[in-house]
Length: 302
Image (cartoon, rainbow, N blue to C red; front, side, top):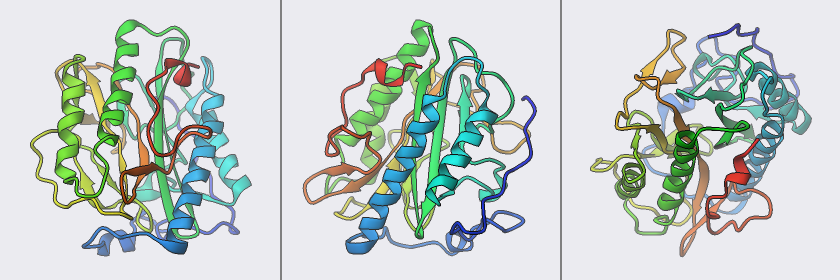
């Protein structure tokens, strides 16, 4: 790891989640938790849609600056300023003592990469994971980007990670068992020479940063629950190149990496279950919110 600069604090004027100023970064409302998946409607759903729109704006701004020579620390500062400009709070900041506003995960980093002063290099793949808090609600999304000319394995990995999320999205409708999502993700991964990371799951998001339902990305899981209209959650499969879906964590207690040094990629959206399907609350502007577009590498090329 390279140098990590001191944590920046958000202005007092910005509404903050309950963990923002806690020394241990623990969320009391998450500790108490929820037993049931909340059903969002009316004003709550309108706020959820707005926070997802804002999260998408921040990710799109940050991703425009991705190129060889830029550091993760610079991306963190861009996310910080984008949040200040919109009077929103970057959810990762001090969440369980995470030190930065965004996760920047390069190459073999699976997730939770802490932005540092390492310059991004030609041929890297970089995941940006953005979460924001606004009027009492969180949103969550991420994308993996190809920096310059990437090798064929990296292109296949990023394509497969996207297509695994695409396959999972097709299952979202009332009546689907949450446990079934992992089957289609697994099939998409293995037929393209990749493996699913089992440790991290999709999750409910809204008044809690992480709440019910829990949505594993692997097959033969025992997740409980059935999708119903008004449920809001993320699906965020993480795929490693090759047959090893394991992970290990650096001494910083956050950065998760592949055990072999193989590369890893991920995509994430926040979804709403509708009466007859789903809405992508974190969709890119100009795309159909009621389906995911087919994979286009130009969308993620930097």
